[in-house]
Length: 212
Image 1 (cartoon, rainbow, N blue to C red):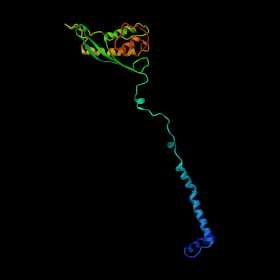
Image 2 (spheres, rainbow, N blue to C red):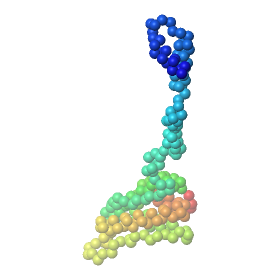
Image 3 (cartoon, rainbow, N blue to C red):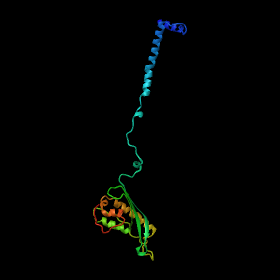
């Protein structure tokens, strides 16, 4: 009842009606404090809503510690590799001194090889030399070489067709298969003759056989 009378009094006590009574000032002060307190302390529903908005989610705070993969890791060569290509056959000389050479290119990251990339020229007789040197060690089973010549019964031909383009290509493929099988053998990789064949400009046939 008293509060109701206070509200009625506030309606009629207006500015310009003279000095306000003491009870009016006391009620006005209490009402102001109540409003400020209500603003500072939210209701239970408001507090839960504000707390929910301020709480970080797992996706906002968690970070992956994995190392980013660069292009080298993604597209680099495998950990251990050995690639040997036999290509670019060239026939040089005339008459009985005519022969064909092949470019032997090697790429590797195996620590046993001094050079990681090498490119040399070899002829068929050099492959024969390597085969004979490796056969000194009975523990290494040396694969066969491709045939020496294409036997053809052609008149007035003394070369037996060994300089025919088709025969040279067939021999190139056979030599590439031979050297890759040899170089991939763990025991053959320790032989000095293989390293000389793959990485030295010229072959010293008077070398001392041994391990690298």
